[in-house]
Image (cartoon, rainbow, N blue to C red; front, side):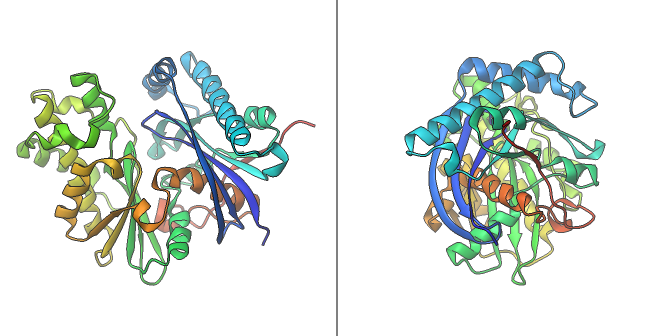
Length: 370
């Protein structure tokens, strides 16, 4: 198979900015990791994206862009083009050095039960701006076939496990705005699904209660005590009892459920909510509990969250960086990997990862104009 040099771009539900990562792969084996980069969204850009997310629930067609959604898509496309151009310049590269870009886009709505998922980002516009072919719209084919459209990264987690020499069973846990897990079983099979809220509720809580963008080092949560009655009520939501595969929209839960609490107790409650939902996922996996969990995403930088995970899971829980992986850029790397798989027509989702009826390829290719 052909080894390609690919750039992956990821902008998650935290809406903080664009992660950029270079990967050399044939779509099966990781041949080399390249440099990484980041382009932050400004406060005004985040405001536009937040407005777009607030308006997105009214959508009934995935290609519609009414009101602020059109403005937000232009913003997302331009920001990703800037991120690529700055990345190339910083690393002494040019467009001909890159075979393909994998564009995740900015998710503003994810309702697989309605066969509707919307990621902002114009693949054709990005290809024109960078002069590089772009694979985008990775989730649509899976959702149209009845799958959850998420998570998409499990096949890359399996490639990372092989590269790092990790023995199965092992779990990869990504704690972004929403948390998701990949269980890699001893026979190599994959089971993956969203576990529940990740950082989104806690981040929103901190913004509204303290003005801070996040609970830095988990200090606010560590100073509080969880509301056990509220946690019991939250974890009784039927979504947690639904069998996998399953995925979650960022806004299915609201930090407003903790409105009666002070800032520390609210932060503690929402942090415990994330951790206990993750622990519930072990029961749903259908296999033996993994002895090792590799944690990536923003949650890996929260010492209080990591402490609670170790306490609740009773297993080895390590940040991805400790396994020689670049934890903050795994998802960006994954979309580089998925773009190469898409070019070769290889599947990116399976019944065990998204509930798709069969292994499915995905992604749409946009090429630069001549």
